[in-house]
Image (cartoon, rainbow, N blue to C red; front, top):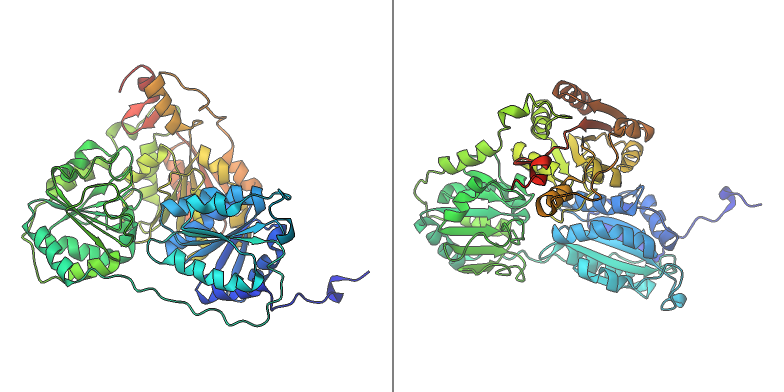
Amino acid sequence: MATAADRTPPPTDTAAHAVVEVLASAGVRRCYTVPGESFLELADAVDQHPLMRLVSTRHENGAGFMAEAEAKLTGTPAVAAATRGPGASNLAVGVHTAMQDSTPMIVFLGQAETDRLGREAFQEVDLTAFYAPITKWATTVHRADRLAEVTARAVRVATTGRPGPVAIAVPGDLFGHRVGPQDPPRPHVVPRPPLGGEARDRLATWLTRAVRPVIVAGGGARAAREDLVRVAERFGAGVYASWRRQDVFPNDHPLYLGHLGLGCPKPVLNALSEADAVLVVGCRMSETTTQGYRLPDPARARIAQIDIDPGQVGATADLWFGAVADAREALRELAGSPVQAPYRDWSAARRRWVDSTVPPAHAADHAGRGLHPWAVVSAMRAALPEDALITNDAGNFATFLHRGWWFRHPSTQLAPTSGAMGYAVPAAVAAKIAAPDRTVVAVAGDGGALMTGQELETAVREGAAVTVVVFQNGLYGTIAMHQARDLGRIAGTRISGPLDLAGYARSLGARGATAHTREELEKALAEAVGADLPTLVDVRTDPEVISPTATLAGLLAGDR
């Protein structure tokens, strides 16, 4: 019987190798996947390439979130790969997140073999049709010698204009085809459109003459943080961060007025409601950011929008002025304007936001069935470095985090605007792999943590010493809140608890700790930050405290 040593090594001139050379030359460094039989050669080629790393995850959902999180953090696409129908279906949540979050991402989907396509072969799904609504571009490649070319185009599409995911479906027999030596297609750099002198001067004059100008900054402005600060200071404008983009502007700056998220306190919205000029930069003006498409109100304020995607300019609001331009280029031009606006006092508006971040006095001595969620955030602020990179999941617990944690430093927040549960843990793992010197903390509810918490094993295997903070209250809290408020009763939202989540973490090779008090939590966090293994801190929180402004019993009793 032939042994592994007797076998001829796989060829190195296959379509898979050509694809990987394209990816590596574009700066792609990692592929996240659950290996499948329909892309064996691709996984092997990634694993053998000296510049790339194959990260095997425990579920395709985790792989998708990891690729999305790395790309969001670094600005360079990561790859997610999955096989045929079931694998591609599992991966879709992460890809949809990348689409809504404008994150560049390359997705390879193994497909049935060429001669079996269209016959409902084993696990066959029309992957191009499936992925078309959740990607910038989805295609199926039918020739091995075109794979490198299509991959180069995918990188270009994913990273230009409004960034986003691109999906390439590949029949399982193509990756192994020998295509001979190929020079990787040269990367084609698409120019980032500037604002231009005329538009700059028009906007500068408008902002100078306004009485109460406000800027709403989104993810497109993340790479231009310093220029955004300069623009705000030059024109005396207050700044709001869009939904889950709180690190776009330093929260300790006197011009920062708050975060336009779910449950935003009404006093925090006053400055936006009363503004006479609103400049929206690098933000698609989503439902959440605009508070249900209500703000800014074009009847009260002139609205200008700068976005790199012409399809987003004026898509959800009537504009006074719109410009298709790269946010970084536009802000740099505005920052260099010779016009200087008069001083405007935003201290009252800022005070309203600062007050909203302060835990109520009763949170410290809360006598409920567990810790008050405010106490958890307070302990995090006391125990964690202020430049920690925070990844957060979906759920009502996140409202306390969004209000209570100050994002003072750039690149310190990874959170899904799609509201996808299960994001935090895999996102933290990818962030730690991509930035091993950073302190990375995942924050999740028990619902989301048990959707993708198995990726702690990936973290152990990959040497990614993340900290995971779980608010365990035994509820799908957001839905329980809606049910109690709208229906007067809850259904299907009580989940088992308390569970030994610390023991669960230990069973995966990670560290685990349980915290019932703030003192226990601070101690566990301090130890986690210094540990060389991933750590899950199971925090028992009171299910009765359903939001910063309501209790579950109060909503069930009809309090609104």
